[in-house]
Image (cartoon, rainbow, N blue to C red; front, side, top):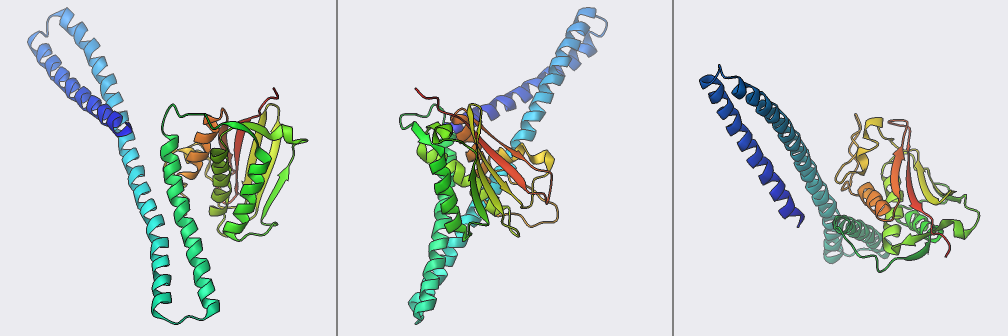
Length: 302
């Protein structure tokens, strides 16, 4: 459905551009033939203004389409890399185990690395599938229920420690809510778990040298906030809003690009808005770390 809609949009702007060119030629010919007539001149000025507006609109669309294609190509390259690298690693270890006699300690290490690569591979596939699901409109809410967000955050924090081999000092959790009722929301359990997990994984990903991440639960009026603060590479101020766009990744000067698909924060904001909330980021700039906040409306007691 999205591909068909996009093709129709492109066809519309191609036809619009062709019509504008034809109208411009007709006006020029009319002005040459009837240059003394006042009415054609007035009409010509009006139509010429319409042509300028149409060409401006057409140019804006073409620039956006070019940027979208560039982001799409970047996404394809990133996903290909994220899929190819763990597959190649797993294959190498399996060939080693098949062709050589490996001692038990080394064999267990190989199994651990292969499991980590499998987890990375599964995470990439899940992100792509989740982004595709969230792009669909009019999704069902039949599985929604009242959920204690504290339980989800605690689960995701523990999973983050295991997945990234972090201790409690490097990935901490703190709740500022008075009671569990202050952190109860209404929504989809799997989607909320995915949103919180993406927040933590994103913080770890952009903290390559110094992993110190704080996860906080805050009761703010009628909202519940999940705030993830890191001391990583930071976010340039002009990119604070762009990082939530699909396929977009932060570009840092003089630093190696961080691996990923560019879907993590897009998934976070999509889930937040689907639940009536939002997501936003704060940062003082490069090298200053970042704070990414998930805001959800609190479920009111019946």
